Length: 229
Length: 194
Image 1: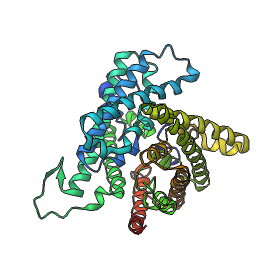
Image 2: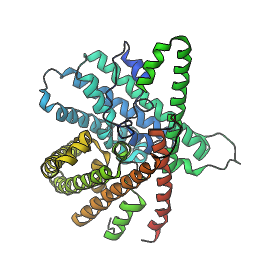
Image 3: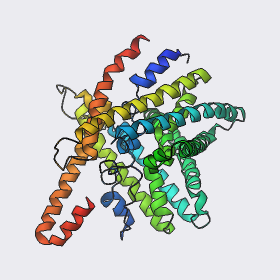
C-alpha cells in the first residue's frame, strides 16, 4: 500500500470544483495535499526569500503553460501531446530563466540549477494533463494561478519554519536578538525533510480532526472521507 | 575548472549525493522505495538513463555552442532525455517483461526526474570534458541508486513495526530520509582535502 500512496505523478485526483483558483490554493494544494514537486520544495526553502522567488517563478510557468496548452488543446493529436506539453513548458521555463537573471542576479545564483529544473517539476505536467488539456482557457489560467500560488504558499510555510529555526531570521530580519543560537540543522538538507514531515503531519492531524468533527454531524460523510484518506 | 576524476566521483557519489543532499529525484525516491527488489532495479534504470543522456547532451552542447543557439539548451536536453527514457523502456520491455510491469508508470516518468536533467545542466555550467562527464554521470546516478536502495531496506523493516496510522505514509518516509541525509552529512568533510 505504502508503495503507491505518496507517488508523485500518479495522483490525478483533482476534482474540478466550482472555483479552480481556490481549489489549487487550498483544497488540492500541490504540496500539502497532492505531495507533488518535492524537489524544489525541499531544496530551495532554506530561506523565505528563495522560497518566494521559486514560488513566483513556478507560478509564472504554470500560468503560461496552462493557458497556452489550453489554447492549443484541440490542435494537438493525443499521441504526441506529452512531447508538445514538454516543449511548451521548456519554452516558458527558458523565458523565466532569463527573466530571473534580468531581475536579480543574486536570486538567480541562489536558485541555481533549480530554475531550469522547473521543467521537471511534476506539478506542471500534472496540471497540463489533468486540467489544461480538457478545460477552456480562462479556467486553465485560473487553475494555473491558484496552483502556482498554492505552491508558493506552501514553500513560504516551509521556508518560514526553516529560516526562523535555522537562522533566527525571517526574510533576513533578525527575530530573536543577538543571543539566539541558530539551529543550523534546519537550513541543511536533513532539516528540509524534517520540516516537510512536520507540516504534512500537522495537516493530516488537522484533516482527521475535522473528519471526526464532521462524523458527529453526519456519519455517512465520515465513511466517505475514510475511503479517501 | 580542472577537477580530478576522483574528486568528481567522491563529490557526486557521497558529498553532494543527488538525492540526500541536493534533493533531486524525490518523487521516485519516495514513491518506489517501498521494496528493495524494485528499488535497485529502478536505481539501475535511472543510472542507465542518466549516463546515456549525459554523454549525448555533452555532444549536443558542443553543437549548440557551435551554432550559437545556447538558449535552446533546456528544450534540447529534455528531448534527449525523453528519447533516452524511451530507449530504456524498450530495452527493459524486451529483456525483462516482469520488471517492466513492476516499474509501471514510473519508467516513462524518469523523463521528469530532475536528477536526469540536472546532469546536463551541471556539466554545461562546470565545463566538464568527456571523461569528467562520464564519471560525473555514473557516480551521481550511482549515488541515487545507493540512496534509494538504503531507504527501501529501512522501509522494509519499518513495515513490520507498529506505527500510528497518522504518521504512516509520506511523513514517515520523509523522517527516514532525514536520518539518512544526516548520515550523509558526515561525508561533507571529505571534500576539503581533495
